Image (cartoon, rainbow, N blue to C red; front, side, top):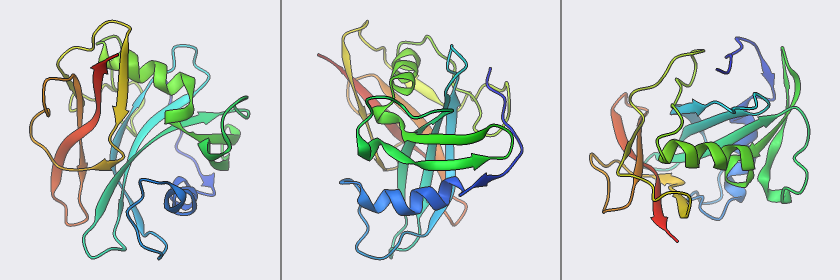
Length: 192
């Protein structure tokens, strides 16, 4: 199980995401810098113990209506060879672990492998900020079809009480700025 360190990161995750998020094709903002707040998420353990894996939800409050975004992140001790340039969110100085290269998890093989394991029922979601603590609020509805399936991340999150359609769906929650908690689809899978 991954240990959560109570320490500083400079720049912070939110500072890195404030710069990175508006450059993404799925970002809905219009010109102004986003005003981001942490709103939820969970972690997965890397079986090799080398990569930190976090699925973070941030809410942009700069628009008239807040927008929730899912950003899966990989925290690495060195640059990820072969990763496309847009995959790097940035680097940060961790108060315990030193320099961390932070990648968009959609481009990181450790993150995608563990997400696929979760969707097959072979990984346990962990609490976002507590060490060695499972998060039972993160659920998978349906079953991923063996090894051959595609995963679609839902980058812009929408509240939904039930899994959409027949595909296996990863559901989890987040909190809006007014304190309202909701759940929605973080990812869906379909056979190839």
